Length: 142
Image (cartoon, rainbow, N blue to C red; front, side, top):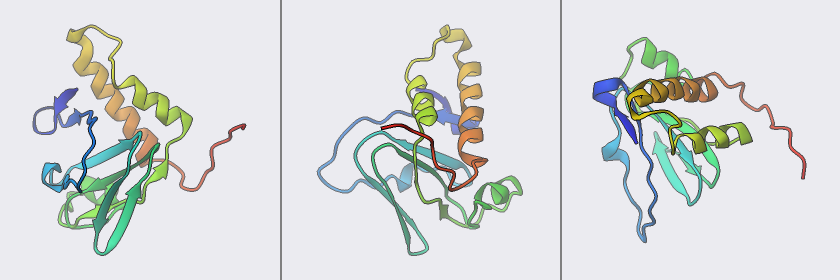
């Protein structure tokens, strides 16, 4: 949809397909970068150091290909300690996160302004996922 990890430092990609067999995303990861997965439907799995995580519908999480694990994951990346691969267990997407995800499909600005708009959205995604207080339940009515 927008950007390039190597060029802009940020990339938004939208994948909408189904497979009959397991699909290995590992080769598409960018070593040393932090990748955010926002899953609307279907199921995805990730693993690192014998730890497996499952992305169920309406879940999100992030991971990093390198050498040091983090939620300290983010800290180590910032500190330049990029040697260890790590995954964060997926979380259920809140309604606010679902709205953020939906907004990424159609940038509401002119094409000329889209690079700035997507950079702002990348910061919003980072704020939403990297600085969350874990375990805080979302208030909802049924």
